[in-house]
Length: 209
Length: 337
Image (cartoon, rainbow over all chains, first blue to last red; front, side, top):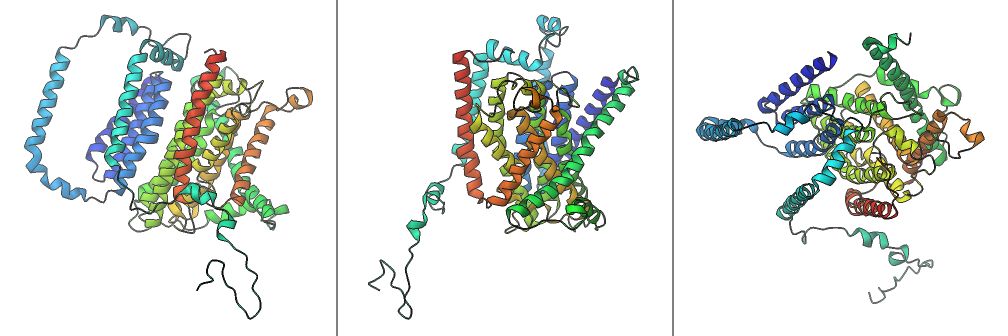
């Protein structure tokens, strides 16, 4: 009973915040609602008994991805009200795209059949004698190892692509070389010169002046 | 009585009582950590520190708390009121919530869950939101700069922290904090993984925005960083959250590397002392290092901070992870799961 109640509560919050992501006028508020949605999705995973996935979702999406979203959105100084002015002009194109996507989804869903093995597996939603971290690990690293490695490589390619696209030549920027700074000793820069009274000091290396 | 605590309602009551038994000492601990810090820093800098209020200045934390309570809460014009008020609550709430899984003694955790390490890591990665939201909602340039700095800093150091935690997991073969401590019965992980222990602690300093990584506050450049605009209780919540986070990071270090509640030597006079005291002693030791570092080291420059995180800690922890996994696989030392 309590689990059901919790499920409906958190899915209600999830749906409300998902709607708020799209409708809120302030982009920062939209990202914050997105974070609330992520957290609630993680809680739903937790209620379903998938504790590993729940916390990975929280760590990856809430802890890293959404921070970067928030970071970017906060620094954008865009007047989002001005963006909405073109709404009527772009509405036909937008609805066309939406229609195409909806039609595609409908075609996919129409031909959807549940695999016969899946309904059998649903009777045992959780492995009995092992935690789902262990179950997931053994599944990924034995049965699906090539696919797992492949997805890792795809992510690596995407990362390298992002770095290449945003890389700028920084030759003209004044950068500081930390290794050089750390290697500096007092002897390299400091000379102690005994100064005699009323005679002044001639710096070594500056005698010609 | 014990039958009552088996019912649904009884479990709720029991959990509330357990939480109180943890939170109240934690808050008192936070209060006295401020006193501890000021006295230790005073001793290091050849000053006296607070010594007027009460015997040895022991009532100073309560005097400070009362002062905070009676100040006016100021909300700046143009601030996002709701977020401005929520931000310190998020910081403080997360710092307290994380304690639910830390085992203070054998099976003395409010929730002994299977993925305790992931829970801790998730909560500590959420901690950045309180700071970012505070910086943005204050509608102030200094606060915003501080928030940006701290966001970049915490995300950077989390990466190497994650790899270190994975290395620990490779060694112990479980995500349950209680089992992680029990796996260190014969050898604390701080000994074989000493470099990672040091890196973890330094990343912890960065994660809690403590000196020498306190660029988010950076009072010499950006006034006080993300909490410039905060006053009274909302400021106090940030303050409490920072110190609670320090204790939390010390607790994490103790659990992952210093053998949690286990006594340092496994024979008679040491094992007679209850585990809670060993746990507290180790946490206090870590906290002393926190204060010691703050009193000793100057603040890093921002590019040094980023270079340290990405170019030193990340490669070292990554290579160490691969090396540890390789060695354990080669010698067949990997734990059975």
